[in-house]
Length: 387
Image (tube, rainbow, N blue to C red; front, side, top):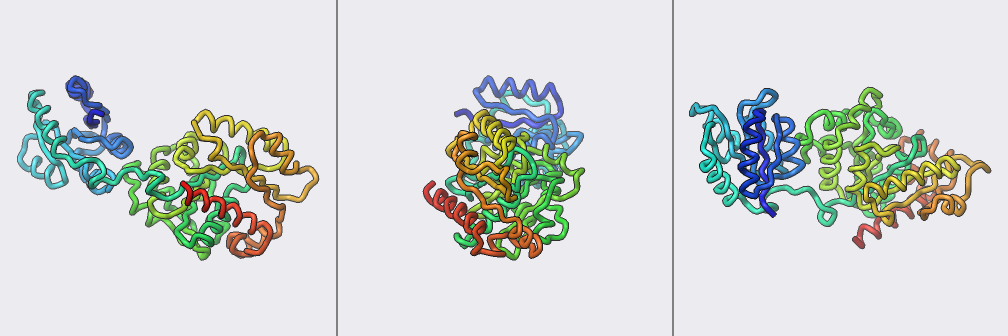
C-alpha cells in the first residue's frame, strides 16, 4: 500500500497543487485546512508523513508540531515544514519544536518530492516507536452497555458487571460513563462533582492522551476505576464529539484489562462508533411490549452498523415485581434474540446500594441478584480468555 501524506495548510491553492503532485506519484493524500483539523486527522489517520504550513490563523505550525510530538500516538510521524517564512530563527524554531525537515515557499516540485522521499525512506516502520491504536488482541476487553430507551438501568448493570469482573479477575477494571450531561454514577457512588470527561471532550481528539485519560480516573472503594459523566444538562452537546469519544475508548483500553462503557440509551453517532470498537455488547431491556419492540429495532440497527449479533447479549432487567412483566421465555420469543439473563426484581437491594453508595455486588454479594451479576461477569471472563 502506498504511503499516506497529510498536508496541513490554510491556503487552498497549496493544498490542491501539492495534493495533485503527490497523487501523481501514487501517494495517498489527506488534507486539512487548519491546525486543529490537522491534529485530529493526524491522530485518526496516522499518516506516514505530514507536510505542515507554519502561518495558519487558528494555530501556527510550531504549535501543531509541539502537540504532535507531545502525543505518543503521533510523536514519531515525520514532519516537513513547508512555509513562506525564510528567516533563520523560524527554521531554528521549527527544528527545536520537532520538525524533521524545512522547505521555504516557493519551491520546485522536484525539490519537494526529493525531500518527501528522503523523509519517508528514513522513517521507522510503523509500530517501531509509534503508539498504534490498540487492537483487541493486545489491549483491554471493551464491553458496551446500552438500551433502546432511557430509564432501564444501564448504569446499574454496567457498574455491577464491572464490580463482578473486578472481584473475580483481581485485575484492573474501568467503568466509563460516556453520557455527558446525563451522569448518575458519580452521585450514586458518592463521588464529588467530576469534570474529567467534560474536559476530555472539550478539547481536540489529538489532546486525548493516555496520560490525560489516566489522570481523569477516580478509584472507588469497590476497586473499580471510574470515569463519570457530569450531571450538568447543558453538557449533553458534548456527545457530538465523536472522535474524542472514540479516541478516549482506545486510550481506556490500554489502562485496564476490562473496560465497561456505559453508552446510555438510543443510538447516536458516538454510540454507533463506540460499539464497533467493543468485543461484546450488552443491551438492557425490560419485559414489557414497548421495551421489547424498541430493543428489536435497536438490534436491527446494530446489523446496519455491522455489529455481529453473536457479540450482542440481552439482559432482562425487570426492576419491579409486577404481573405486567412478560416472563423471560416469552420475552425471548417476541424479541427473536437470545436473552443472556433475567435479573430478579429486587428494588430493596438497589435501594440499599444507593444508601451505602456501593454496587449491589459488593454491598450484598450473597444476594440472588448479585449472584446473577457475578454469573454474567464470569461468562465475560471466559469469553475474554478464549478470544
